[in-house]
Image (cartoon, rainbow, N blue to C red; front, side, top):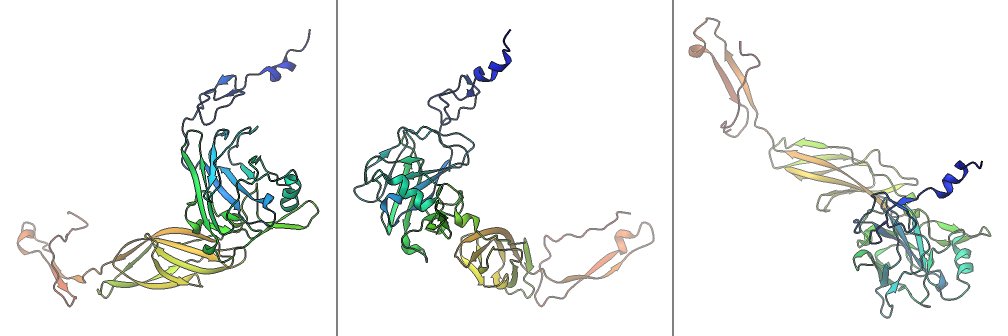
Length: 357
């Protein structure tokens, strides 16, 4: 008799989401495993990189990243750039969904040589999806943006860029998102790529990282704010000097700047050294350390700070303890003495003993 076990794996039922309206619909599933997810999670698909001004226009691309635990089918999704004359493009015919933690490259298709051109500049990286509308999209060389929509019209992600926001800019380098959870619409979340791709013949290509972790992410410094910090306004003037210590922050090359900010992003102090000081009013603060390396890539760490008002200096100066039973309430007393130059209102203060015997 044939060994039926040899055929079990071939005919085993594929479990997955069988709802075609679900985000993680699996058209190959035979058994619904209850994993269907309806709707788009926040920050689900993120635009993480854009090559906006390469020497060869065929080499333009943008990159998407799946920031969820779901397999997402992008067919029916659509996008457009902000430049005038660029139509909306609907994604069709994608053979593979974007997997959790996976990057996908979306590139132009101006002529049949795109695969050769792209590979010459980006080595092993090849587009996962190529447009068929000829010259679309044609990114602006100095400023533009992309909007990405789900098939139901929900705006999933968008970016705007203007190269005047960056110290390093020009042709043949991409803009990279520092971290996938950073705000895409904040230009401070983006930095120009700092490392080159290597093509098949071993020569250097563009400054970019299509299909891989961004070069600015791999080179991001580490911020260590330490804390929490707590100081007392000893002289009672309403402010006190606070000493910050960013020791423990590090970078592969060198940290150029330590910026200390409050919770409203206001700059409190800046230094080229980990330690610095600043005089601050009495109050509670959310404290943010921002370290910036010599390539202008940054990271932040948060802690807390309390600048406490000075407590009046009132001391127990004398006390009398009655040893005769029954006379405690008549003769026992505690004397307080105010060492402060100002009067002290004792209402609300508490006296207690360590023993009730």
